[in-house]
Image (tube, rainbow, N blue to C red; front, side, top):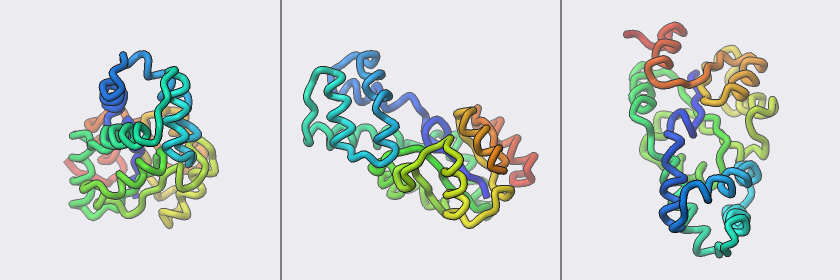
Amino acid sequence: MVVWDLGGVLAPSGRALPALAAALDLPEDDLAGPYWNHRDPYDLGEPSEAYWARVGRDLGRPLDRGWAERLDRVDTGAWTVLADDAGELLGRLAGRGTPQGVLSNAPASLATAVRGASWSGVFETLVFSADLGVMKPDPRVYRAADDRFGRRPADIVFFDDRPENVEAARAHGWRAHVWTGGESAAGVLADEGLLTG
């Protein structure tokens, strides 16, 4: 089974902040700190309204429920655009009948958006930190994912853009690799016997 991270792997990581900064009419640099500083509780299941309220407090600007809903739409929209190279690999693996899954640190609203995306149909199972209440690189994530995927650790090939997540996955027994792009991932998958030329 091939398991993919979402942000920075399946979806490019540079789209959300510019779109959100434009919606708020702010410089992107002003938004980056507040956006990322509160992300872990959000990825662990905190409601979106609470997350955006925290972001607003850091910005010195109240963000009410209406703003939270609007910003959440912009944010999830940015993180559900599939990267071309990742999409090509998903299609090639699906064509070979290779089981695929997702393991991502992501809030509940993004998990819902991904499950509803047209490209998510290639995945057998999608697992998100908001569902589990624990996030990568915590070892409990990989154990919980094994149960959800119904696979032994040695049966999972995993791609993530963060080395600490890859190291934790390897320590758990997954065949994990740092994502550096579609071309190198295709080489890994070929070496694993999961893709041919």
